[in-house]
Amino acid sequence: MEIVAFGVQADERPFLDRAFAGRHQVRSLAVFLDRDTAPGYEIVSSSVNAELGADVLQTLAAGGTKLITQRSTGFNNIDLRAAADLGLSVGRVSCYSPHAVAEFAWALALAVNRRLVRATHRTRDFDFRLDGLMGRDLYGRTAGVLGTGRIGAAFTRIAHGFGMRLLGWDLVENPRCTALGMTYVPRERLFAEADLISLHLPLVDGTRRVVDASALAAMKDDAVLVNSSRGGLVDTAALVETLKAGRLTGVGLDVYEEEAKFFFVDKSLDIVDDDTLARLMTFGNVLVTSHQAYFTADAVGQIVAATVANVEDHLAHRTNENMLVTRGQLPATAR
Image: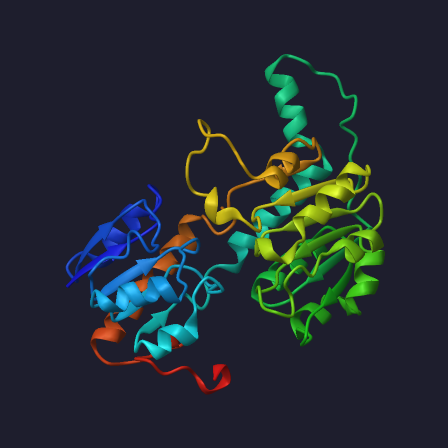
């Protein structure tokens, strides 16, 4: 069986080659899966920035595709109902190392709190002044965690290690977080009291732009905001206005609302036509990375292993916990 994988990063390719060796032939492509690149293969593997709306799915189905296995946990880019109507199967990676994302979220938080990017730029020019580089101790301050699943819990454990007061918001309380001393509160209170806010939520109707203008207005002027989950959780235009007003100590973003047009590719020679992203990048207290929080050897290995399992189970007419649509059938909870 020949499988084509889209949006494959150079460091990811060896993992796919090794995992499928002796099983199937895999073609790894750097381009993203969309209407123009949709191929005539029974099995395709997509990345999180693929465009899998109804029109793309129709093109895939017409070309003979039976299984789409996405190499990510998030799947808000896939029209699952359209996939079901077309008789497709859709799989994802239900979980991988939560430590990869949680640790990276902390890297962002520490970098903006202690002005590491500005400091590095200065010292490369042999400017060793400390002006404008003062940060704050995290010990004794309040960490607000929105979303306390596996990744949020891992983030919470690290916050506990820093000696921080812990506030959480989620639909269901995680006993592992409460055991660390976390208090679950309404999100309005969390926004108002937290010194550091980190987002670990899925992007669904109820969480889209959960950090909007009113949430930003409620935050402390010297708060730190970190988003390593989904770009659509933050109203970026409102965030820009907040930063223009001189508020927030720092912002660390590994995701962006319109990232599909920019992330994972080299745009250094192009004119950037996204005024919001361009303005965001001008703030010295903002650090933007390109959706790399998951990108450790441990996590990528687990993602690829789950992708192989999705392929093998599809060919053997089995299902597993990763399947979102199985041969045109949505799970009962999604109907």
